[in-house]
Image (cartoon, rainbow, N blue to C red):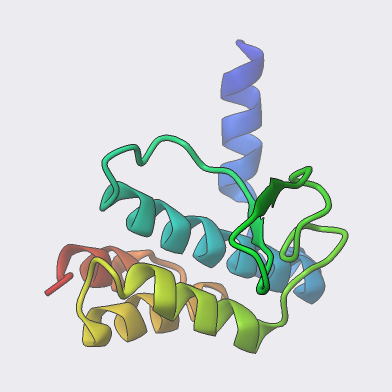
Length: 127
């Protein structure tokens, strides 16, 4: 049996109850962060380029930072409320506010449901 198939079968058997709560929360935060950034990037002409920029408030200068050192990275994680605010701002550039909240709540409830129906329904109804 192919290694990928074995891994997929084992992953399919994992239940949220088997995963430590802090890991579930981290995965939900990371998913929302990437989904929000991806949605906002899709609205840009060059949406495939994702990089971290830090703006200097005094001068219009920017500097690129290593991705492992930016706010929101594993070494400098965002809180749940910061993720919610960032997701609202990023996804809100592309989808209606009500849809943003539906997607956010669906992701937050993933560990309390056996199906992805709420999330897929929220993702289908953007406007």
